[in-house]
Length: 402
Ligand SMILES: C[S@@+](CC[C@H](N)C(=O)[O-])C[C@H]1O[C@@H](n2cnc3c(N)ncnc32)[C@H](O)[C@@H]1O
Image (cartoon, rainbow, N blue to C red; front, side):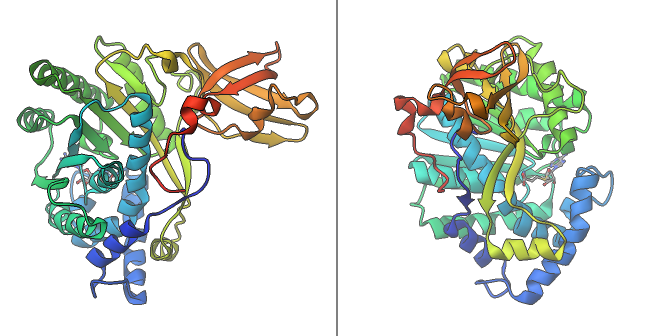
């Protein structure tokens, strides 16, 4: 992503609000609670990572101890992804409306609400949120968690509002909810693949949603977006890319991020390749301890995402190549992968060829947009201008503190 050069520190307000809401003494987790949460996490992890949350019976979301553990570990692990995505959206394809109304499908304990509330609070914008999930356990936990967050932020009445609906989601119930609630943003966070295990069904849901959102926009002229976020694993990320490829074959589907327009996916062209985001984060110590007890470690926000808007991206940004890997430093050279309108390619800089026209390559990072690039036949970088080095970009304030 564009704005995350240094490690992000998990905001204190959020860490405190979570502990206050979840700890037995209403303040901080005891060592016994951390151990218990860690033990449960070691049983929850295979349900999510190996089974990918798909189970006909005895779904983890209906079990009280799993729901509480999800809230203590995965909610903090995931929520900042949403603040980062909103930062990026705001810069590349801004939300035209003054306030946002989100319908979040498969909301769990309210992960999207936490990330979006934090972002809207920082940006001084209003947020109305409707979270929908099949799990009674999650819809029981979510309002308490949300209240703790609003208290910790000291949010003024009416600026952050959340409602929670207990509902089994199908194509029909999703569309019905959107028609009734008229959100300006529809989100699925680690949820679409659970709600619709078959890719054809995911395609149907997204296409029908885009159509419904466009009807709403015709009626009230409010701009709308649909955002999908999935894990960064190769399989989850590739499925999202496959879904993207199916979607862009249809009229009226407009990709805004991460790839800036409907260009064919460079990663999909090579078997086993994928596309993901990676942002280093210092998580709260209590969360690290819960993870440690379960043999897990989180030091990064790792995810794949797709932002769909309502009109084709035709501005200057839309055609720019984007860096889609980290920098590989090898003996005598540095290289990275970029995604262009004609596919993915590797570019490199030999240490012996470094000069003032190409030296910014040394600091290049995943998500960078490339304003100007001259390459030799062997893909050696001869000159490079990064978009973030332009004057107009320098003033942009990333919302997540670094
Ligand atoms: C992995 S969790 C994601 C929770 C949250 N969005 C996040 O990113 O942390 C997936 C959620 O989708 C919900 N879910 C799965 N299938 C569903 C369905 N058919 N109807 C409603 N909710 C569903 C589960 O109950 C669970 O809360």
